[in-house]
Amino acid sequence: MGDSSSQYIHMVQHLIEKCIIFNMSQEECMDALSKHANIQPIITSTVWKELEKENKEFFEAYNKKRGEAKISASIHDELEMTRQRIHNIMLDSSSNKDSNDK
Image (cartoon, rainbow, N blue to C red):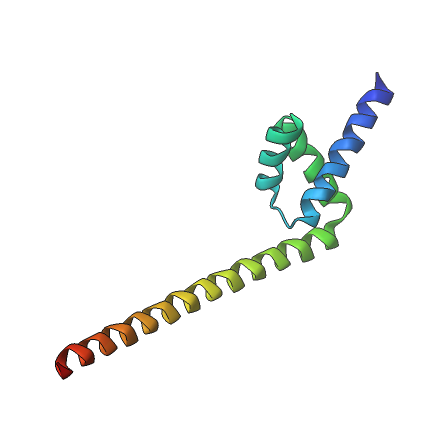
């Protein structure tokens, strides 16, 4: 029994590492493994927490990087919305000018 449970834990660890490669959060990883590998979220959470304990510096850097990526994505979204607003203002201005010229 010990050997098969050890293999199972190693498999979960390997799948968590794959999730990390895809820059997933712990919650995203738990959802993905639950849906696609039929692994209970409590198992994923427990293995994830053990990995965090064993690799403290890595997870600190990983979480920082994920936080920065979220901020960057948020800024990008804001800039895109502003660009779209400016584009719409230009279109409105152009169509108003065209109708005034007639």
